[in-house]
Structure formats: structure tokens, C-alpha cells
Image (tube, rainbow, N blue to C red; front, side, top):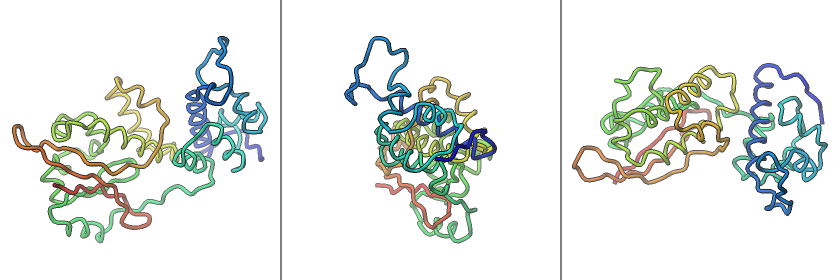
Length: 264
């Protein structure tokens, strides 16, 4: 293990995000699930740091520094801690990425080929999103079904923000909450990997300010990729509902993801 006390730059910020992520999951574990006594003297929920350290085979001080973002550590330690905290495959991969053992996802601008691809889908709505879920391109079918992104100010042209704050988006997708929650987990995964990105920080602040009633969302450290789902759309008042399957596709390595909706 290599001590890296003194967090600096993006690496230091990512270590702090890693520490916060581990702490949040530690506090969610019921001690009884691991055969530990609940104890009336526990002042905080979940496992104690010393319990995680003992079950993971590391020192208490070292694990405390890990949660505080003060040290770098080995993949073996992170694997052991992830097992102790019962992290699923997605959360475990997120931990490794924050610690620098997996490369952050590359990004690239939307090129003409991807725009042509979306245009070729005809009546299939599609919108390209950057890692922070800002809309970077869309086809005519998307603009005809959803509020036209061209009519939305660029700083507001964020799919997660619009689902949480825009009545027109919520009218079209009445059951918007599960979709928005899944998108937030998707965003959280990328945000933790680039904590000093100004767009990420500004969007995080806007979400908290716009929806303080969703404080539980903003404090949650769950991560995951957006899962394909079938939803019911309401294109117009009194009109029959329209079923749509929403899927996030990556047309090429390093390309923006594209949210595709198959209707019917």
C-alpha cells in the first residue's frame, strides 16, 4: 500500500468522492447481516469503521484515512472492502474507477456520422447526451415527440434537469420519477469520476437548488448505468397513451451515448 496523504487536484477530489461513497455504503449495512451484534451503544447507523477494517483485513487507521480521502491504496484492499460492504458489480467497478484502477470513460464530440445515424432512424426519436446528460444532438422525431430542445436555452438543455423541473416533460412522461432516478444514478457514476468538472458541479448545485424536496436523492451514493425500460407516454390530453421502450446506446467507443425510443 502506498500512502498518498495530501489530496491535490482531480486525483485528490476523486479520493474524497471514494471516501464518501464507502462511508455511505458502510452506514447502510445492518450489522446483523454480518453476524455482528446491533448493540444499544451504536451512535450511528450501519457498521463501525473498525468493523469494516477488521472484516477487510486492514488497519483501522488506514481504513479511516481511506474514507477521509487521505490515502491511495491497492486494488486488493478495495476488493476486500467492497466484499465487506456487499457492493454489487456496478458499485465495485465504480470504487475501482475512483481509485484509478479503471480508466474514466472517454468522450468525444458528436460528429457528422452520429448525426446522420440518428437522422436515418426516421420516426424513431433519438437524442445524444454527454456524460452529464446535456443534450448535444437530436433528430426530428425526438423534437416532434418531446419539447423541441432547440427551443430550450442551452444551459437548461439537460435531460435529468428537465424531467425533474419541466411540466411539459412531466406531462409527456407521467411516470417520470423512476426514469429520472435511474438517470441520476447514471449521472452520479460519471460525476464521481470527474468531481472538478465545472459542468458537473454546476448541474449538481442546480439539481439541489431546484428540487430540495429530493434531498434523499442528492445524498444517495448509489450508482449504475441507465437500464432499458418500457414507459407510457401521454402525447396529448385525452389522447390514447403511447408505449415506448427507452434504451441508452453507445454507437462507438468514445462517442456520446444516444437515448433511443422505440414506439409502439
